[in-house]
Length: 176
Image (cartoon, rainbow, N blue to C red; front, top):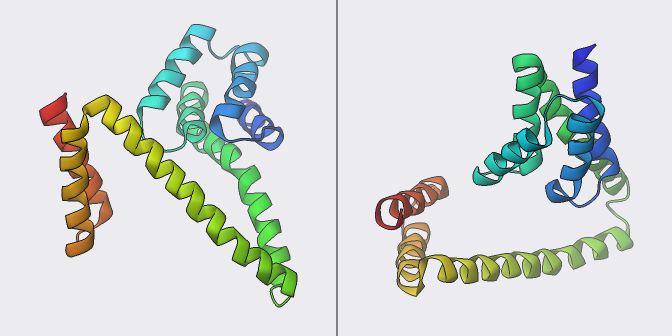
């Protein structure tokens, strides 16, 4: 029965919540702390702080950790699956619909409008990361990391993950 409760504790917030991890965190807290009593509010806050410190989406990290604490490895897998299942189901439905009407003029024009929107969103994200980097590390370190990353990505065949690792290493050695 614990696995079913773990599944519901993460599936329901993710199916009714809209807006990604930050929007569903209070819903998850209500389930984990309020309904099931698996954690205290303080422990949940610490889990949230730890999740924010690590890369990748916050909801899946928290689900994996809380699921593990409650029901071991199986609990972690079930909680993580319950977190991504709503998005997966919606994507499959949307993909099926788009594929069925792929020759439609409306679908083709909709697809053409999505590209510029994604481009603008990515540009905004890049700009906000740049501003945050300059504020946190300063112009010099931001310029050094950005320049080296640009050269590595544009002039070599190095995998982007290694470039990210370089940036992390630079920050840890020289800024930490």
